[in-house]
Image (cartoon, rainbow, N blue to C red; front, side, top):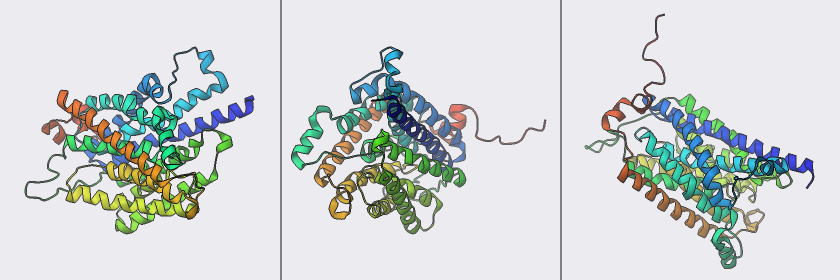
Length: 400
């Protein structure tokens, strides 16, 4: 392998890592715009600190769990091949750190700060990389067994199941264990409206995520010679499919309109390298529809206070994406083939079950030991003042 391809591959995956790193700003602004004004600072601080904890834990433990390698060698060794192994770690870290960023949106406005950091360390250090190693590194021979049974391995090109469904299904037990925000569901059966505090910031977050997502999907090829324009256009088509479906079903609600493209992108990750663009459009439209319908059901009928709707957005749309890769990736529907619906069902079900188990265990232990939730008074004052001792904007301007 000569120097030019080595350098090109390192630069390629580094650009992908930077684009996905920027997505974490998108997570922050999406949460900031959705929560009430008294919790905006907390949203920003949480995402940055969660990313920092994720980086340390994934470098020291998580990456080794997933890929059986480590970085406890000399810098001379690490710098080989233009440091490709290191930038690959950086790229995959940005995926791992998305898990706590996803969970953060579900537990917003009433979760304690430090226990959530402990949860981040446990999830990024073990829960997530354990399944990542199974899906993307062939651990325990599970992929080989699925291939023997169905004729194809479980296929998740960019993480519909490995990242998004994992994050969404980990968040569900966290949200249930935490309980709803105070006075969200009143004793008389009425629901208190908690509208987004800032639609422009919500929209900014969604747009930053959409742009960064091209790095998330396209750069999952990890080398320049396997780059595919099909992935880019499929991502685009799924994004617009999700947007238009959410526009219609959500009755032009700006919250739904700006989450629609995210739903489509979540769903297309798994099969973005296989589908025909029209198939990706349909996958995105179904995902946008799933989000609107299931977000409304969870909030209004089932009274599950998932603030940003991360379980329907990432959990359910990611699950749909894993299954959809087996449908629309087939040659019969214009895809490239080489994928089995049964393999997709098996791999997706494994991911969902592991996430539920991991989420329930991590958040269950934390609730029983250090507690998860702010006191009623702290929640009333808002996480900004209770945790960070400052508000997003001053109550009044100083006169000097």
